[in-house]
Length: 335
Ligand code: DAL
Ligand code: ZN
Image 1: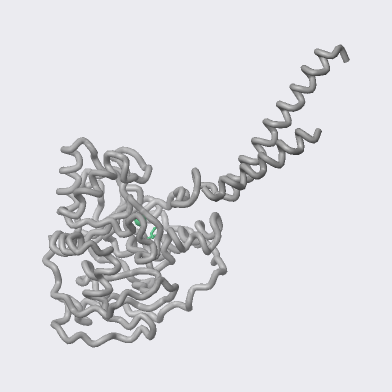
Image 2: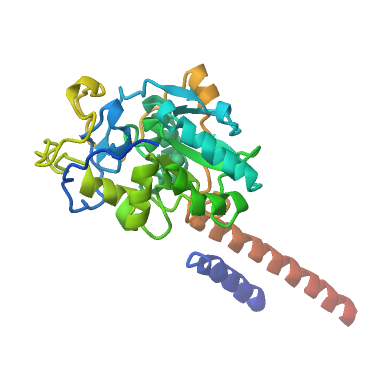
């Protein structure tokens, strides 16, 4: 019995031990830099005109607001990328070129999720909050208004014909990591850079910048967030006030093409909000998928849950072994 108790304690300890386990670049304004710390806020980003697409920044702090909906969304399947969904027409030709090159290499592209409206992002974020809790969800899902998917310039890639996010070790993910920048696309949340991007590693999430700007960002070695803050973003990250720009304003940053102005929503609170349902067309074009297994989870389960499951499993195995051994010992002693 003592042996069984010891084995049980060991198995529980083992369980918990596992816990350890081709658009021209816009003329640069002078971005406000230095890079602000990751902080949850709801400041309207500047610039955010629909013509400012290549240098509009959304992150933990900056939002495009609920009414931002790009006017030129087109179907991704026309680029012979599987999975449906929508992308801005400004990104379409380079998506076709990249998809053709990927196919020629033997690694055709698929789309898991692309344009998402404010409403769809809100439903998605809230579903993650329900599944993982607010403090985890903010590391891998943008709050509504803060997602690059709402810009209509972003694709979460899969291998063609599948709906599983690529990893950088998969043939398709590795091809993208090496070549996407040549076609104007960059991975927004690379490995080991969460202190700068605010989000955990997403080897499938690529945003379009146009070939010129993507090449500059790629060559700089900076993350896209760092580059945009230091070169183009002209809003004070604390006050939300515009910051004056001594050099020529970025192209298209005049008010004529400014996306709808909105009152910034109230600062985020940890309380999850009720989930609205997506419209049928959004559901078709930008399906809300079951939560992926974000970095730091095992098969979609939180580490503490996995640890407890493993501990229970090991304990059951030990108990079964102990009972069997006892039965054998009784038989051998004739009792
Ligand atoms: N997963 C990224 C951060 C998004 O929700 O836009
Ligand atoms: Zn994404």
